[in-house]
Length: 315
Image (cartoon, helix red, strand yellow):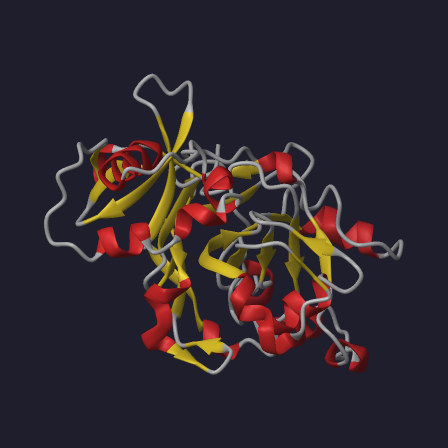
């Protein structure tokens, strides 16, 4: 199922919805209809965080409804007519990992550095700015302090239930679904910051794009092999294909990332975990001989099979 956050027609509010046959349905109205039909008195979700935090609402209701051929509910509109926000517009936490080996190797080689042996010991991450989340087709402002603006082609999972000290073998039970992620980077600032010995800060915290949908993991089952998913990933700038990889090339799986993130720490519904950049998935890796750093007016499109296209223009 494709779950979304969408703007109301006056663009003043964001509500939760779901997509069926290219039509968008409001999530609260759907649950009110189902509750009336079944004679149940329940709380209704207005946002996707509401939905994720009310597990009793997810007793296959939407899954069963999504499988029907005809739905009598009123629609919000056709998918192409609706302005979407990021699926989780302001998550409580966002951890971005560094889990694709090819990206790490190539990016370090570009800087004249060898691979770090300790990288293979466990997946590492940094916390990013949850107040700077951008949705699909939302403009991304180029910070005045950077000349080396870059995109990063990533995939993210959304946590679906609370858990602490989650074991790798049980981690998939905590994943609600996946979405496309663009971890925008000011590479010149990032390079200066990491020399101090801490993770990126101003090099990262101005924007992170997510969406257009949160696709529940049951939709991807046919592409799953163990802990990995065979999903092609692409990135283009101004219509020119630059990056191409596959989600199955993750060295550390999302199960391993969740196990690491939850050690002595509680994960909550709606928390977001990013994969890090897929191999070839940024200009830093490709080199400026392949493409210059991003500038105002550039349109960046990231696509992942079954997860949709995430498009943003630099302003």
